[in-house]
Length: 345
Image 1 (cartoon, rainbow, N blue to C red):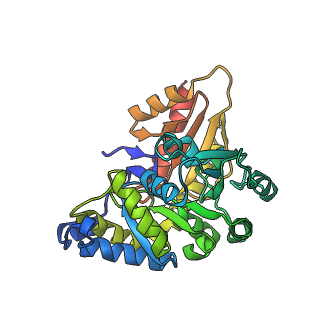
Image 2 (spheres, rainbow, N blue to C red):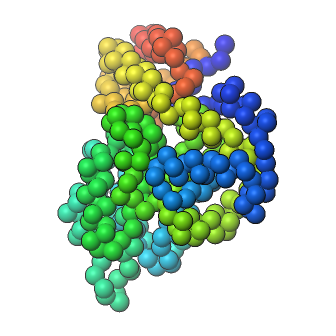
Image 3 (cartoon, one colour):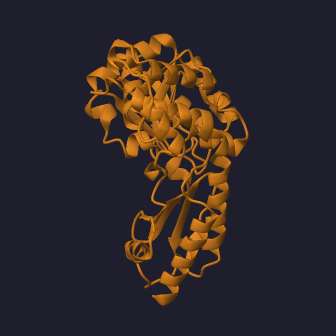
């Protein structure tokens, strides 16, 4: 029996429809702009997010870095949250490869940056300072329990950015989860943004890839950045074909993943010794409360023996992620395994 894998929605496998689309994809050389399936994916993505153009990239990390390189020059500064994925989990690429200085602000529990903090972080025109070029947000916010940022908040940040002549980038790896949770169209959530990335390979179930969207001029610059980062792919239509299915078939079902996450959270909360954080989308953060009991890695190892894979974050805390391949029966089995592990400890 295949394990119940709750470690991340990155573990999703392509659906049968995706595999069929990949097998019959029409391809060409994407670096020459000649792959018709990549071109179709990019046009579809731009249309869905109401942007002029789009760029298919191998990963969300590359998409975010390409955006930063297109928006900022060496020595420029980007205002970013201290709990954002781009800062914490992308190996410092903005500094290491772009020479871009992060200006860190504290993410609030709801994933936002205080507007007053953003305004205060914008540098004046002084030769002693780096030039502030960019504000970066994340939606949904992974490290803040998968909370979605509202269109109203993003509009306020966009207005602040325009007031100061800055650009706004959104790491929208799970932007369609945010749209499902808030019951709005995804393009509404990114309307104020100059650029946005979203992942095809998480909840949308494609095997590889992300898409970066923005103006035609911005995407032209980002395409150059993608090339220097090693992301210029050739017959990439085989991968893009799965991305097209993801956009056409998978975005409307994400509420099912959110419902499974709520089911998991409620079941975990009923087990003595577990405390569960608020659940907003498909991410479930929870912790062990019993002192002197097993550690999170020990619990995760015991669960793996029972066919349930889950990600410990440290000695006491976990993150579980629901996705297309986790149904109600899988949640029931996972909860039974957790009960067994904690009771038998």
